[in-house]
Image (tube, rainbow, N blue to C red; front, side, top):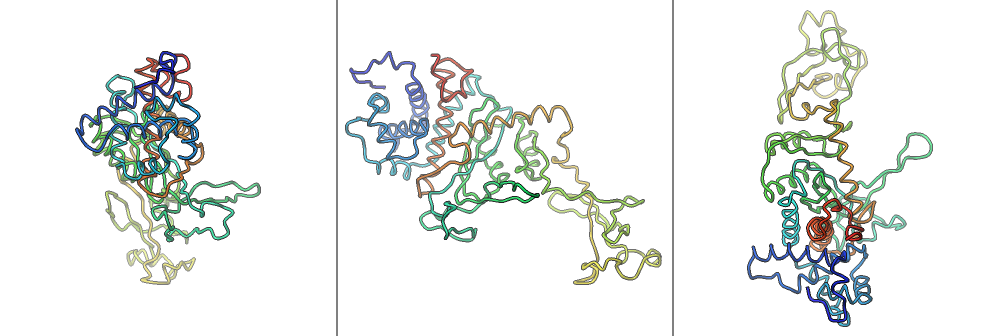
Length: 426
């Protein structure tokens, strides 16, 4: 790192940004060495340093970044830019639009690999969550009278942005809720128990968390290798049977996820024979086993239509409640199921002390996303999809570099999560 003569190098030897940039240079060198001669060059490293600084200072836009750098010549020297002849903002936009996202992620993975090799970060516990990234479009302005809330629409200039659920506000009277939606993306991450980002990805907002989690888990194994016994922690948005089975069969680990009430059927009222009671108050008829998509269920049907001749003599000819399934269509009557699948989802010990202690660690990912940037939602000023992905990858990279700088350069491994103050006591 070159510092001009008017700068006191020793005075900045333990500063936050010099430590961050040194950590970035080490990870960048590893990736550049693996790739050999190619597109990555000194100019790209300078732009990457500047954008890491932008996220560390929570600067909202590239023009504001340039104004900040013009006021901080020492930071410019550390980055490798001349403060009196800074590049135009279009050069930063071009860097974000043309750089492959895999290149930035490779630098991120190299930084995390050094943390794993140094014993600072472990891969035994994987915590997942996501955060909204609002697109730079007028339809995210709630005061816009022409705001579109039709998920089938394609937004001009930002066609990859999709409409998705953001949050709800409980109303002061009654049990009503006011839901809010936004156009944009979501940035997803798997972090370690220590709070370091392991793998991340930014995708359109309409993709479900459980599908993205499987993609991130596959990437984790591809980058850091397989290891039995890992624990995956996620909130109820990840409560899907295929994710449990994926953790058990392919990752050889355990999922720690609470039950999502929306994925649960209401409890069934059972009769004296252990069969469900239909809406008309009749005990239903057992009709065999139904198997589909890895599920095994007992099937029960309306006793009036499925019962034997002897059983029907003791039952009314018509449905007592005139249920529509008895009177319309094929008139099969009501059907009920009891799930008897012995799958990974059913085997999670949610009533145990282990589950409570393990799931308590999930709050670490909420703190991680609050360190990433704006507490409620990220904002983007870009329109190009690759630029948006690169923007978020650099944000995650900045927190990985903070951990490397604190653990190895400043030798304070207890401060790998202190992104504002990890260099204060050095």
